[in-house]
Image (cartoon, rainbow, N blue to C red):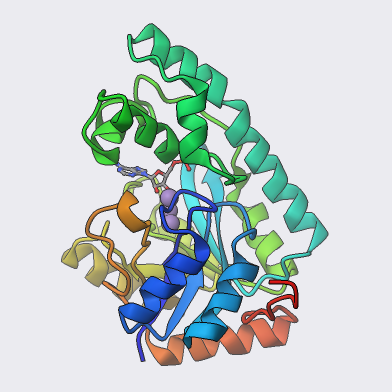
Length: 291
Ligand code: AMP
Ligand code: MN
Ligand code: MN
Ligand code: MN
C-alpha cells in the first residue's frame, strides 16, 4: 500500500492537469494520493473521478498559505468540507493576495532588465485560480533569464529575494481553526524545510500540539535531511503528533519530488480517516455526475 499525502496539479503550481496527475500515480503504482493544491479545491472533482476510473484513491487535501509572525508556514488540511463558507472565504482572500502582487513583481522584473509580458505569464498560469511564483519562474525560463524554477527562486523569487513581493497569508492559529471547523485534519507541511527550526521552533509545535489544534507534522519530505527527519520524528512522538511522508510532487516543476518518493504509513492514514469522520469532514469525495 503506497500512500502519498501531498501532491500538486496544474490547478495550482504543478505541471500535470488533475487527471494526468492521477494517471501518473496509477502508472507509478501509487494506491492513494491526496491532492493538496495551494489555496484551492478546484482540482478535486476531476481528480477523484479520474481516480475512480484508474483505481487510485484520491483524497481531499489542501495546502494553505499560512504564516506565524511573518514566517511562511504551509498548512496541509485533509478531509475539509470543501463548501465550508469560512474556509472558502479565507482561501479566496489568499488567492486575491496572490493575484494582487503580480503587477508589482512584473514591475520589479522589468526594472531588473527581465521584462515578462503578461501573455507569457498567463500561458503558465493557465486556468489556475491560484497564481504563484512558480508560474513566474516558468515564464522566466521560457524567456531565457534562468535555466529552471530552482534558479529563478535562488536568484530572484525566494522570500526576501530581489523580485519577491509579500502577500496575504492566514495566521497559523486561524488556519488550524478553519481546518478543524471544516471537519479536517491539520498537518504542518515540511516544518523544517526552507523555514528553519529557529523560525518554527519545537516550543511552538509543542504549544500547538498541546492546544489540540494541530494533528501532525510532515516528516518525510525532500526538504528534510535524514537528521532533520529523525529529530522531527522524535519530537512528534513525544508530543503525540501524527507523522506523514509525501512527495510534494509538482510534475516537471520540481526535481527529485517523484510521486511516492516518501510515503505515509497505512495506520497514520487510518487515524486521519477516523478523525475526519469524527469531525464531520469528507476525506474521499464523490465525483459529481457531470465530471
Ligand atoms: P508562492 O506559492 O507564490 O508563495 O510560491 C511558493 C511555491 O514555490 C512553493 O509552493 C514551491 O512549490 C515553490 N518553491 C519555493 N521555493 C522554491 C525553490 N527554491 N525552488 C523551486 N520551487 C520553489
Ligand atoms: Mn508549490
Ligand atoms: Mn509547501
Ligand atoms: Mn506543496
